[in-house]
View 1 (spheres, rainbow, N blue to C red):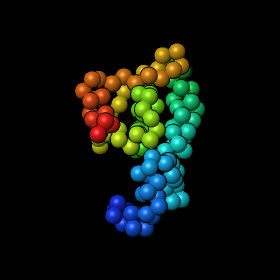
View 2: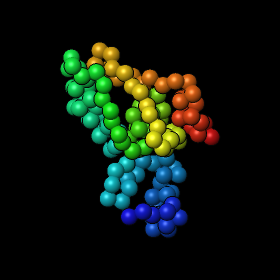
View 3: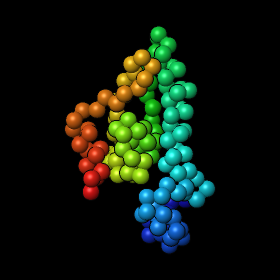
View 4: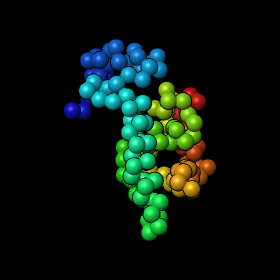
Length: 122
């Protein structure tokens, strides 16, 4: 069910107030950013790291949504959770990460970082 921000604000005014105060409240019948971040790292640990550690597996493609990417990028760039929503994820964007000694690191070019973080300090 697609709802505009205006419709959402009328239906859930308390949620909007909490978000404006940087309180990580859950969507109705859904998750908050902290829940998604936990799910992101469970996925990385159980699926990505395990599979990439096999000798015949060097690359993995993950197709996902922007909240997942914001949690992943926000974590690696040490951005406060309350500011994850400001990370500018473009549609059909590609983000590279590398695995070294079973640890994942972002591999971003300077131009990509500028675009990602342009709204962070507004």
